[in-house]
Length: 454
Image 1 (cartoon, rainbow, N blue to C red):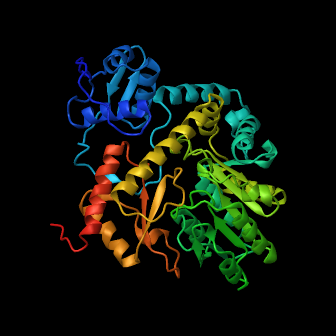
Image 2 (tube, helix red, strand yellow):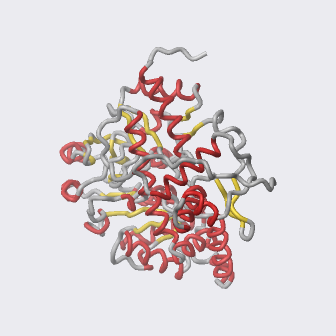
Image 3 (tube, helix red, strand yellow):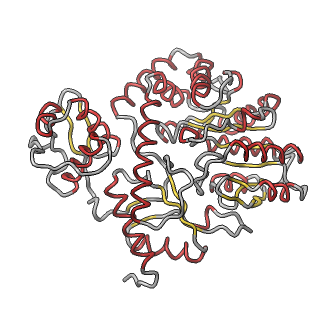
């Protein structure tokens, strides 16, 4: 590791409307990406940076935290802040816009502290929590309190089933309802994970027409009226991939259609913390007919695989038995780490950072690509670029040839739907510089549809 220290004395701050600490972070990232510093070099101290730019030390601390979340730098206790290894070159490697995962929002030292705290906690559980099929009681209490504070008021520890991520949660819910329904109704473009779960159970996925507020109730009535379907799957906040947030009135209209046809809703609330309309969850509006699913992967870290299911009360035992048959129970260590992060307040700072970062990245995307009106301009982790399916598939192929990876368009469109488009995961790249380069590449390809790639 080099002992050479990066000099920041002559770096200008970008002239943007971002907060001061983000402008400072962008200036330092620009210097690193230009090659002014090699991997392993140490940044000046917070006090030295503060003097160089005439900003408060607190501003420097926030800037370094932002760079750490972007994966640009790492802190070493007692030694300082060092530039991360950037090999292979950030200018030549593939930029992946296909994975809807958050950037690093929990600093490594905080994650380590939470893991150590969890290890001590689960070591005291009988059999390490192995026999707690729905999750250890103290972990369910922590996560129930977190849900009550953030998304689902009134939920109790006994309502919760802890599982291995939201994907397993969705699968558990569909499996519990399989004997009632051979089909699942959802928006014409939807999360490919629910299509995989349905296919594994031999279920058909039925497309429902949608607008910027969610599923169109009249078309849902038509689909459910065919008599083959008793399950409706939806993500009402940051719908994946369409990106809309469903209003309270639309939720009530959809629930009325479901009551008419005695259908259940599987509510995927994994992006709920991005919500801006203030509507209660479907679960809060109709607890006896809604299966609620969420996890910590989009707000803290995907490595935790900490999922939660709140089924209707009379179905909880059935779902728990299904969980036992599949994996016996989720890892108490992973769940404990997530609980420790919540107890340390990491979820609050992470949510604030992600919403602010998503908002700025949406602005960046809109300034480069001719996007349709954004359904959630206040912040969302992905945007949908509608276009005919053949055009979308061609763009995805050409983008890959230019070093930008996109989600395969057909993987998110339900058979029989007229939907078509490209999902852009704006939070996937570590830094905004990578995102900007990917967006400019896509803009060029869209502007020159007949360009031949050699």
